[in-house]
Image 1: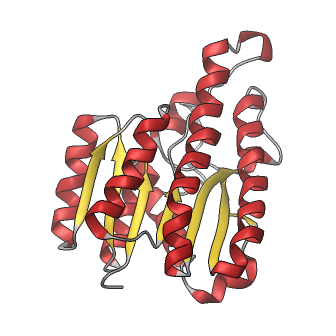
Image 2: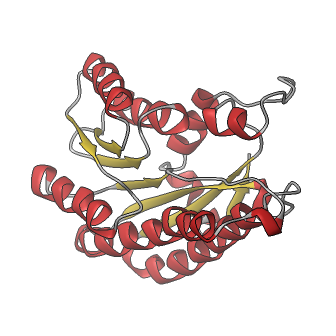
Length: 230
């Protein structure tokens, strides 16, 4: 995959970091971003071990200018984007009457608007290349949310439908899109919401990363637009 470029949002830890590393190990140049400086430094150190080109950027995905800046810097540095992984997300938990305006706005800004801005910005490059893969991290909550995950589940349901729409639009240009609906994954997000969640059946971030990275294979093209439970 020499010459191929993957962008992974939310690369400071967990699924994002594991996915960035998975693509680097496949030979991709990798761009990742996030807000936590210490987490970004650790990710950069791990990417350096892989020996491929990489770019680690500080970005607040609640800000349109930041997410669009990540795409602009990727194209300026590497000249193309072959894979875009929309991983960054937030998941407020609470009864509907406890969800604040800030919770609501932040959830849809990061889980939905940031994905739209990133895809819109990367789209012309993928069209010019006549190909690309867009992978968005969704959740089984988009189909059957846990109590208290009504806002999170709704944002991921939007993500699933957006994925189908862009897959249909991208098909003539060789652009494929998938959303991956995850169950419980051993991440800080899970433990902050459910600190006592049983370890049985929990996925590890590295397992998710391997599955996500596999979606670039042409054998998945028949499933473009699908939400894939994992």
